[in-house]
Image 1 (cartoon, helix red, strand yellow):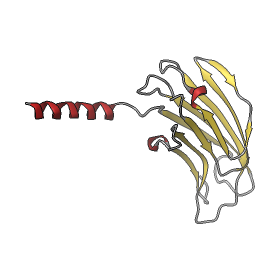
Image 2 (cartoon, rainbow, N blue to C red):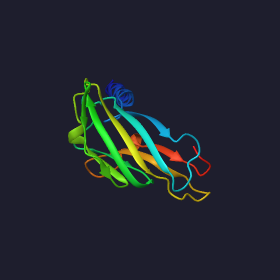
Image 3 (cartoon, rainbow, N blue to C red):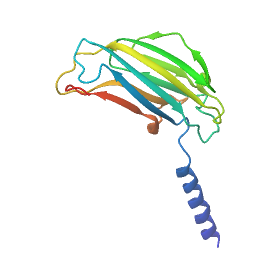
Image 4 (spheres, rainbow, N blue to C red):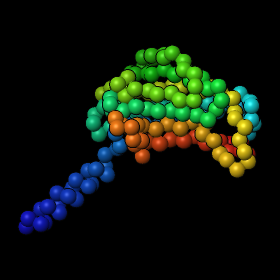
Length: 162
């Protein structure tokens, strides 16, 4: 009886863990201009919408974590705004290959409709024929500096184009 009860509790726990979305789960939609092949040393503009889908902790994104975005584009300029319940909150533009967004700033109750509108402008790097490059990589980093494996999103560019 005791072994059966322990097994039932363990199985219930496992099912609940698998059914819950990862903390700070998000979805990403993308668009790119110019359409078609990207050639070295040409301007590239990419836009994304990052929609927060809530988490098992009842918050849109863990306040203690960081949303890290990076790119292989040269001379990158990040323009973004946080939209919460229809209210747009533009943020200062950031220059460089990396944009770090604080979980404290992104953490809202999961019942709120929250998303980021992001635009990335840069110059296509010279990509060897055997390599692909990140137009965008997004990942959630926990308070210990470890990447949350299930959170990695990549938008890759291959030498022959998109």
